[in-house]
Amino acid sequence: MASSELIWQCIRGGNSYMRKNKCGGVFSAESGNLAGKHSYKYSGIANSKNVGLKTVGNDIVLTKGKVKKGKKAVGVSSTVFKKDARKVMKGVSKEVSGYRSDLSDYAVRRVAALAKSVRVSNAKK
Image (tube, rainbow, N blue to C red):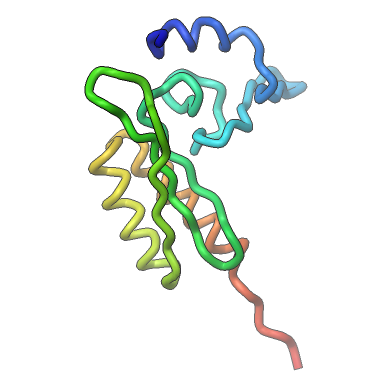
């Protein structure tokens, strides 16, 4: 298996997940990218320890790449959060800070945005 640095050198010039902005910004739409930036630090393809968040119905699912000692990610571990937004943020922060502490803040921000999108608004009378 190739190293993560080599994979990043191959995909950084162009891949199907890149989104270029008219103002010069380069973003990414890959599944393991919490920040949405096209960067080695946030890449879900190049990094063996990747973290992803998505919604399934009203639940928020945290996915982490499983890593064997000294090897690339070999599988995916997923955790489903079904509680209210504050408890989900606390749980995700704890899970991600133990796995990749540099992405903990981005994961909490992403959970807040996902929880807001899932939240049901009250009907006006």
